[in-house]
Length: 342
Ligand SMILES: NC(=O)C1=CN([C@@H]2O[C@H](COP(=O)(O)OP(=O)(O)OC[C@H]3O[C@@H](n4cnc5c(N)ncnc54)[C@H](OP(=O)(O)O)[C@@H]3O)[C@@H](O)[C@H]2O)C=CC1
Ligand SMILES: CC(=O)N[C@@H](CCC(=O)OP(=O)(O)O)C(=O)O
Image 1: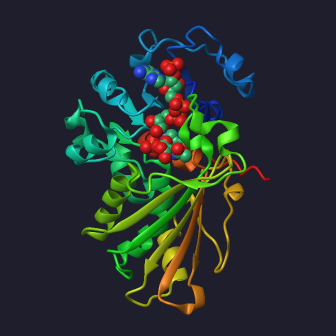
Image 2 (image 1 turned 30 degrees about the vertical axis):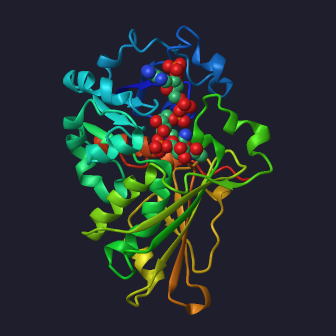
Image 3 (image 1 turned 90 degrees about the horizontal axis):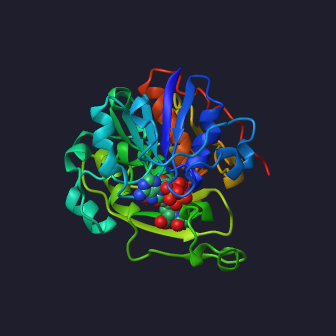
């Protein structure tokens, strides 16, 4: 059994980590922090965890994080970069669910995240935690930068195409829709029921902070620069991301075969039969990305549909997948839940 701590246990990704880790056979939950709820039993705040988690929230200053084998940061951007070094020096491995270690170019990170980076050396060391790309590096990593939710759905959908150089890399388009839990649990007017229910809107069209993260990943896969238009949307649902991806074909290949063989050995990527329409509810609460490929009117534009649960394959599930790889467990341990339908 490994000892696990979570910093930021009252947010949506924190409680999702708890749900997954409480059922993980190799894990002992040692600490779960909240500054505002220190002393409150976790299962009093999240009754879904009654009978499964008997810890109390503790203040991050008092929590036995240094006694853990691994600590997950499920905190806002800018927190893990201040605290990770101390844990790493104590021999604790770290997975950050926020964006502090995702972007290698510090100037670029500071531009998009609007703050000064205080641990640039750790960014250089961190491994980007997309197992479908970086599995062997994750195995030995002390520090894993867990990918963002939109970046996970978008990169998994585009990767086979950019790796095999069969589409125009200068004109990729990602039209992505997210459920409202993607905005986190903090109180904000834009997340109120009356604002988001029975409504649908694009946001961040002129620039969203996930753009540089997606471009970094796809450029690495392509071995050169990638031009991407990324437009996120807020959809009136709780969980789920549906990314509709467009790429102009430059070289004919059997695209269905390309995707099937690229992901044949990936336990958490499911390539659907031709002309399928994946639904967000087909992945709800599960660590799965389902992908379908279309070629409308046999034209020269390929359309890839990619769906994930933003809180699972887009955050907590992927973080547990990374932990499994880091500690040599079977990668699927604790992650075999069938999606909840409807
Ligand atoms: N929601 C999603 O779908 C996804 C989220 N992410 C990322 O994961 C991270 C967490 O997201 P989410 O769960 O939605 O966020 P929430 O806003 O719902 O929760 C944030 C948590 O962090 C704690 N926290 C806030 N400030 C501090 C601090 N200074 N020190 C220690 N703890 C702090 C809060 O508790 P308290 O204030 O009581 O300490 C709370 O538990 C974010 O960086 C987000 O961008 C990534 C992918 C998907
Ligand atoms: C619907 C919604 O608001 N989604 C969030 C992104 C989700 C997220 O958590 O951002 P990170 O992956 O960078 O941590 C947003 O657009 O800001």
